[in-house]
Image 1 (cartoon, helix red, strand yellow):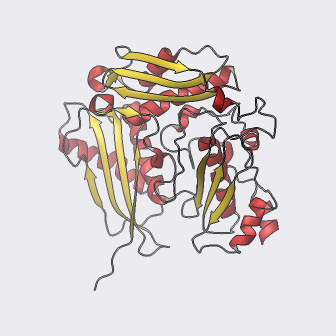
Image 2 (cartoon, one colour):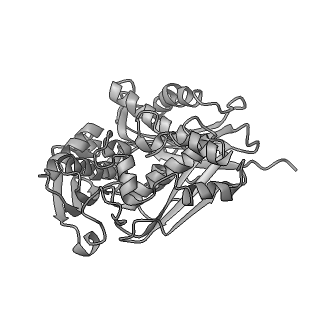
Image 3 (cartoon, helix red, strand yellow):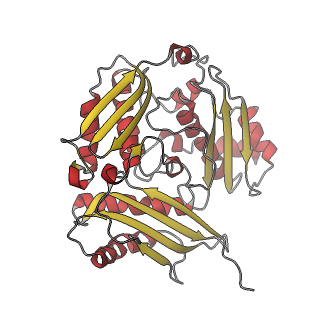
Length: 393
């Protein structure tokens, strides 16, 4: 009997995907709010359909926000400048339904971000993950998937893929039959395009300009060849919100680990840092990445849980998938007894400067929130490695 392949697949989508358009509008609103008022409370949801953007949610801020202008600027920057492309930045309707945060929720969160008593903005479970299979400690199939759409988008904006429109999707399958020698098994790529390009010419250009340059930049075996599916159903002219309704928070596995690790109960985009759905997921990634970088395990997953209004996590757990170099109890003691990492909402906000960020939240809305080679993110630092080694090795 021939050996059965051990395959794993992850996907990514471009910033022009209708759900990602919505994520970016929601995060651009967050950026605007906290720029003027770092203590803004923001929970924004956006919907995009055909020639309409609907913005709703709860915001308490001292900042004067022009929601309509933000939405139009985001859509225009992505590349949707006319209805036939998917939506028109200047022709679309924008409806805004924003109210202030519920006082029942606000009462659980201290008014001062400097206070250790600040409570979690909601209950929930969050996960962080890291693996040593790539240099940015992220799962290989997801990293390749992200780079495919990110690189194709760059070529589109540079004018090197003249036929391409903003809506794109990728999917990458890795063969892990020999875990230490991964092979590329398949790539799927779908690219929205203008009506003038012939499908075979599109496939040729995507293969030569996008797929081969990207996959060859990774230490993955392609010597035996791999399957390639480019626009497998044929033409893809109708894209963006014209082809599919978009919603904030609907591509959450793309935002995190591509399915290689669990995702918590909530989305990230459109939420201020008191929402632990977002900030605690960043902290869990920070801890997991430092643990792997310290050589304590080859893979690490951390789960945090919170109760609304309570500052300390209700629980902390760790999974190392049998890859640990020291006992899991010793690693867990670093998290619980030694408190190498501060998992309180105020501690997370402070150590990563999440209310005065050095990055734009909207830049995280596509291509993942973790392991970004194009962004310097505070929760990607490896500044706890030596301390972890000292405590555990």
